Length: 149
Image (cartoon, rainbow, N blue to C red; front, side, top):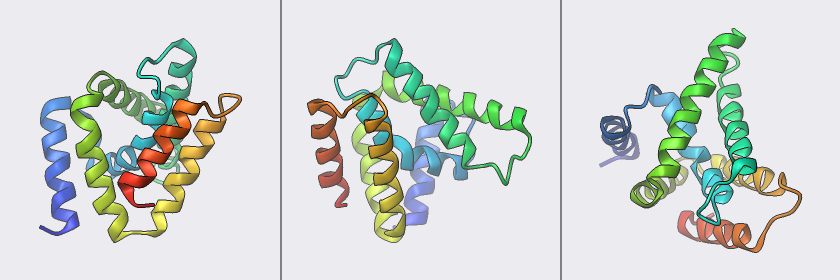
């Protein structure tokens, strides 16, 4: 199965369980930002401060659609959709972690230029909380190893 069909199948499977309001293109953005969510939740417990970072992740994802959604209110609605999916994923991390990483690995294999952007965002959010903790460093190393980047 080629990567595009694999990605579409994964999106359909995710959509059926999560009730996401994202379209396929927006889902790909969620996929590429997924490792960032893992770093934020490195200690497996998202506290109030870390939920603020999850909000920032949702906004950053929505902002990637500035050209498609020049209207601020539409982008803020998209941010809320992204936040709902991020919340769903934090609540179901064990079930979705491996499938997301496997799908992202396939996607990055087809589009290796995106791997640098994934890493940039990963480190940006890891560094945003004063410094990168040992747990975050370990999660980042595990992600890099799993994705082959």
